[in-house]
Image (cartoon, rainbow over all chains, first blue to last red; front, side, top):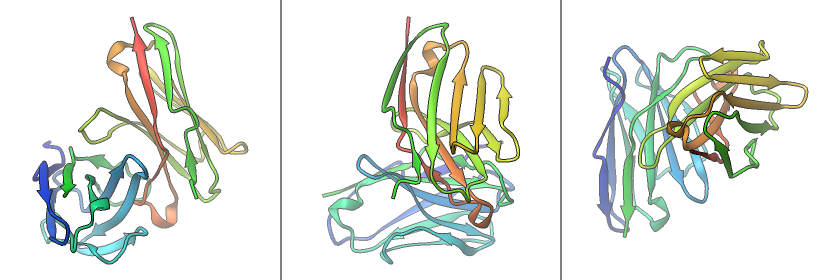
Amino acid sequence: KAGVTQTPRYLIKTRGQQVTLSCSPISGHRSVSWYQQTPGQGLQFLFEYFSETQRNKGNFPGRFSGRQFSNSRSEMNVSTLELGDSALYLCASSSGGLKETQYFGPGTRLLVL
Amino acid sequence: DQQVKQNSPSLSVQEGRISILNCDYTNSMFDYFLWYKKYPAEGPTFLISISSIKDKNEDGRFTVFLNKSAKHLSLHIVPSQPGDSAVYFCAASHTGTASKLTFGTGTRLQVTL
């Protein structure tokens, strides 16, 4: 089975712009979660989508949003970028059941200038 | 509020010896725990997990121990190999928000020859 894929792998934006990141889960997985990794805050949960609905949400401002399509692919959008949004954005997929392991993609490295 | 803590930022172990990585948590609702290994610029790779109904789980060279009364878990790697050198994260979740993983800050393991 192919693993979780994320595109693009690297991205450079300027403050005030918006960005869309994409994640394709492992085939058959219906849950996609997004995480932000920064040196100061570590790995933090953004949100999770299951069957096209947001099921869980972390403590991030409304500038961070996402969606999931019928084929389980997910996109994450960040509007009005700030310097502090520079981070590694990781997506993880699972079958969506309780106590199911999440498998991570390679991440998208976003740099905001 | 750091609900999952890894108090040792780094650990150095000789090849062939045992590596013990520790993790403490404060949220008594957590009932599922995982260990991930991460190389720079890559996504975390799942290693092993344990449910709160168990106190030990083994998979090859990796064993995870859970002490619920102490809210403590540990990962044992025996024998340690140079390829094990990476950052190790413990993560926790609870049934109510199963896909929301709360991560520790990570421990960098260096296995020396």
